[in-house]
Length: 257
Length: 257
Ligand SMILES: Nc1ncnc2c1ncn2[C@@H]1O[C@H](COP(=O)(O)OP(=O)(O)OP(=O)(O)O)[C@@H](O)[C@H]1O
Ligand SMILES: [Mg+2]
Image 1: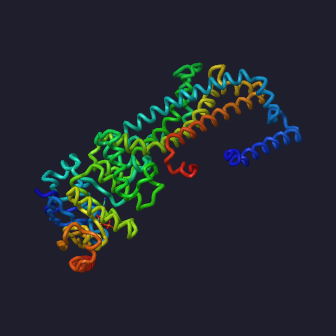
Image 2: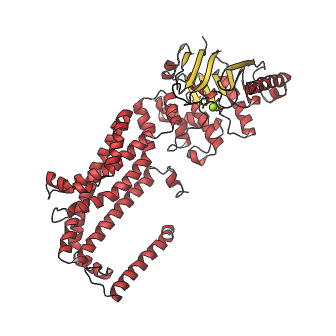
């Protein structure tokens, strides 16, 4: 059974008013368990919208969305997925550790379990020592890492990540890419990942979905045939460069459309 | 020490103002009923100390009672209406309009309803005065929420009640403290002014009008100063509670570290 199945999905915002926006047009995409799918495309082409639709945070204008064989709505109620938003969305009244504990708290974990798990995750995203800081005392990139820790807290089988590393410097980004790759392998989580970075998409993905400028359509899907586990060596392989070039060319076509 | 240093200019200004006041009154030999000198007020204060503290406490209780009734109903109505968007959207324009009505004008009518001698009549006036700012601010705090934060909670399939507890209420606290500060000041003014329309013999407002009617203006002044001090103390208490309750809020961050 596929984890996500989108068939003929259309999304139009403010369809009745004058400033109506056709964000997505006829999206068909099936994602199998354990896949790592990157969405790449020009700004405003509907990548965030697509993630929101899968997460049942908005309803499609037309089309069907199945998550784990259920309606997207049921999947949300069952908390089948974890989400990292484009902005960190941390609660300013909670310390960093309390922010990471939030989903665990809502699921009724014991206080000690919440703390233990949150500490582990903060160490994973290299935020140990900042447990009791407040969000505004952290840089943008650090806040985003806290948001990632929060999304991983409930060990979801499906992770929706909207440009999670956009605010990070190159070195931290590469480190986070490696960590995310490890997490993906160890937990066999299915991940849908929005990014603007071609190297990042190639390094992480099993498939890369290139979307065209608005109205967002799937222009091309590139298979990434790089062996796993990937590491520093991956970035030197010939296949890595070939895939990068392929995606770059499709992206160029996407912008020109 | 730091506090003394910070407030030194204010303290100095206060002393200088007192000296100028005293000096002007003496030099120009201004009549006592026009403006008594600070030293004269001080003498009156010492001579009538027992009576002044007694009536001060009487009116303070009215203010506190009205504050409690008005704020709690304001919060309850806000909670009830913000639960149903339609209800709060219908009520808000009325609340905002009512907020600009000089409610004190209704004092004689409430005196008539609850009994002119009864402290409850003053409490009700104070309650009505503080109700509107309290309700309006609480509704704002409960509804002006980062849409992404609401999406986050929805991604956890959180119930409306959980969203209220974990997101809406903490978000509303800074707004509510602003309302508490306004209400603290208004409640003392409301209590004293409503007593100008008649009230118990041991009320501050009644004392002020009666002493003025008998040309003992220095006593009126002493009582007015009591009202000012109580109002100020009330305000400062709220300010202190605010620091304890929402140290994370941006308005308080600068004062930390
Ligand atoms: N809630 C909304 N109401 C109206 N229009 C919206 C809404 N959300 C998104 N849109 C529109 O839909 C289009 C796609 O937006 P979306 O946020 O999905 O783009 P994106 O691909 O994530 O862009 P970026 O890379 O800049 O994050 C945009 O034209 C945007 O204006
Ligand atoms: Mg986006």
